Length: 70
Image (cartoon, rainbow, N blue to C red; front, side, top):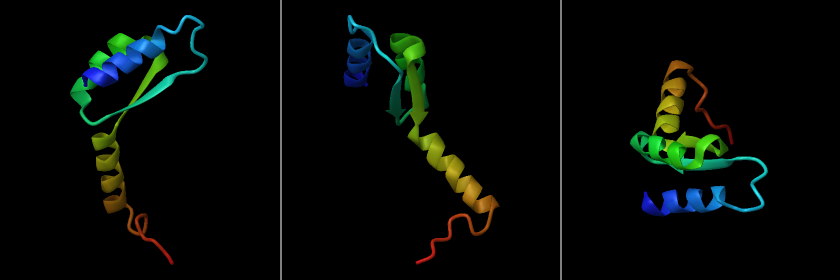
């Protein structure tokens, strides 16, 4: 987590400023608070565990959603 925080902090301190925002992929929701604290409004977080869980539930609720045709 330390390397990710340092990277976000370095990018937010660019003297010319950033155009756009940073997207940070996290494996643990508990780390989101720290990344948001360091990056502020420039950071959007994606928690991989939550996304995979939601996709799994959607596939279970909608038969055929996960079907792959070759």
